[in-house]
Image 1: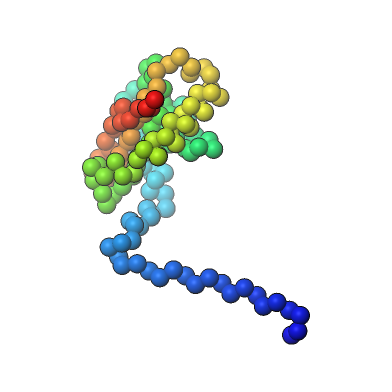
Image 2: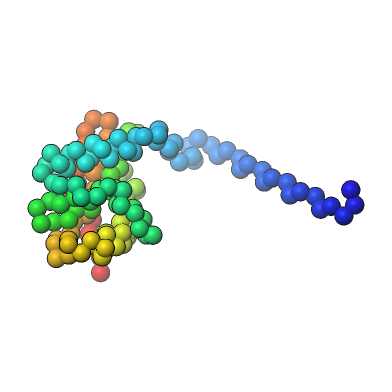
Length: 142
């Protein structure tokens, strides 16, 4: 018909890459939540008190925030079944660490009752066989 502009054609799907170039498959639904539940249970069994879970800010998210005596612990949980603990450096890289640190700062700014307490950043690895808690996995760099 005259005067009508044609509809835009949908973009073609990108071609699949070789399987050795594809990133690992996304975890099955619910695996991350189950891993976080197991990590929280592990922290509680170690005597910590969970004060928040999945705390979000515009900078990012912290999976678990707990009190370990007078220390506020910000914990990142990684649930991986296909990779070992030696691969954690790839999942909690410097960019991820910065996002966790900025979210922790925001948490402390809106929850002033925790001001003055020590702060710690932990990573908890939930694998097929065990839960590994890496206390003081990283710190803020100035």
